[in-house]
Length: 253
Image 1 (cartoon, rainbow, N blue to C red):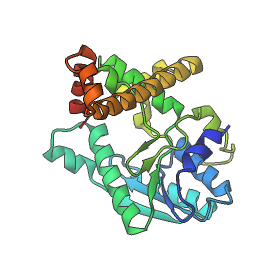
Image 2: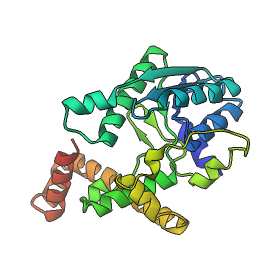
Image 3: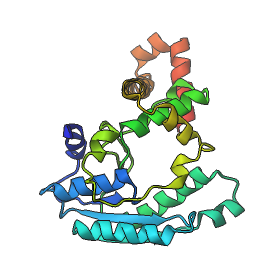
Image 4: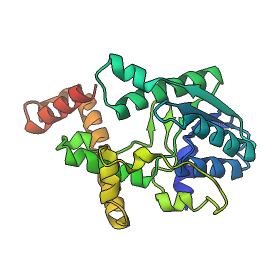
């Protein structure tokens, strides 16, 4: 069931290391357990936890993550960012600010500890939620592509794996965090997740929808580059399709 994860990870060279982004929640803990169980990976990963200072018990969550990593004999690095302070000086949503600061902190750790990639525990469910969120917001087709397998130095090995399959690695006696923000319906992602509960078929369809749009987007980019060719330029010049391609390229750069 994890063949897609292994395929995605095959792009990582044997000498390269990966930084695992661990929140303490069920998905990231399951990811931690999966890597720890892989003989060819357990000595090539480092875990990192970022405290956003959004919860009164954030220190306790950091302690929990430390215990999770220690139980699996995986090195852990801790970082702290001040999301409330950043929001006070910049008009930005909590989710966007937390994500921006979290990835900035993870990138610093990645570079400092000689890791090539950052791996997150995004699953097929997260992918479907992203597509549904974009559709709900009436986004353009090229914005409804879901979560890419790779963006820059960030890898999502489990983005084609169902959440229930990943969490199947967790034992009843295992302890992990349940973030109350994940139940707060004020957040669009929580609304999307609630709408998709117990709807595995819909999750798969939305995920496939996003994947197909990603392929279309890649084709768009290739055709734009190919338009520099004189013959193809003659074929496409002035067409509505090409104008859409060019608009897409402008908006995505």
